[in-house]
Amino acid sequence: MQEPFLAAVVTGVALSRAGLPGAVVHLERALALFDSLGLHDDPLYLECAIFVTLTLIRPHEARLKYAGYVDRLSFDPVARARLLAMIGLGDAWAGNLVRGQAEMLEARDLALQAGRPDVQAEVTSWLIKCEALRGDLSSSAAHLAEARTLAARNGSAWVAGHIVEGSATLHFAQGDTEAWVAMLELMVAGGMGVDSGLTFEYRWELATHHALHGSLSTAARLLDGVPPAPVFLPGGPAMAAWRSWIEAPDDEQRMHEFESVLPELTRPAERLPRARMAWLLGAHHGRRGRRAPAVRLLEAACAGYAAIGAGGMLALTEADLLGVTGGRPSYTPPPPLASKPGEAALTGAEIRVAVAVADGLSNREAAERLFVSVKTVEFHLGNIFRKLDVRNRTELARRRDTL
Image (cartoon, rainbow, N blue to C red):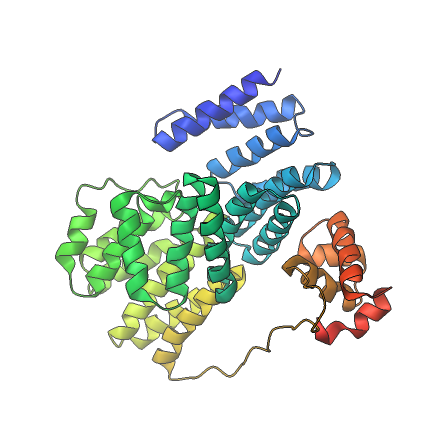
């Protein structure tokens, strides 16, 4: 009964990765069979359905369609870790980095507890990029080192590709432009990476860097012979205008045309590229002394990054905005929460649950705040009470400021 479903999945994914026609037909058929055959109670088929949904570039549907099954069904920790990580990846890709990060951290903890370094490596490799975008640079760097070690132990080319992309994002978020450009060159020239940005977006970014730094010939060589970007890819409707701007970066008309297509980027998976494109344009207007369009575009980019939880990108964009307006940041983030000396360390997921419960939330309210299931909150709460040697929620609340 399941063979037609698996055949449609394998065929659709293979055609999609090869860039051949017919992929969408097979992938849509796979999802239809998943529903009609009632395959939601098997973690393998559920994972396949989520993977197909992501391949169709509909990451916002992963949670909507499949999270309920993951929450209700009793899967072993490894299966739950994989499924939760994929839903978290979908959330992050769809522009909810906060929820995506929380889910991937929980998935990593489950994989660690289950003693599955292969699953831990995959999830951790996804966290690198998400945390860099969020601005959690120390966590991103730690997970980069962890993912490299685990990938080497397991020999995973798939994980290695994610590590390369995550490392590039981390260099960028740290403000190390030279290292970021080097990573872009590595990905573009060597085909290292795994996502749709490999063929177009990363190449466009690298060409933009060279064009804005006076090397139009290098930018032209990067774009020479590259076909137009398909409009179905994230950012696709604006890629032609972006390319045109790269060819003449100081042409105000081309900048206006590029800006005019940004409103066409309305899909959830386009929230991040739309903010990035606005940032590129706004920063260049600022460098050319055109204050009004610079402020307009940089404010739009800041709003876009704030909406998706990309604190790392927001900080960099705000620096460009303040360079135009002459302002200065007035908010200093509070220091991170510290654990009491001598106690068993809480995991990241446990700290988030402990803080939510110490704030007076019920298990269900804590689950809603953290975008996890009630079962997950209950599981972590048991570990929290044991590690902190507290007997109830009242005692935990007294420890709120020392977590």
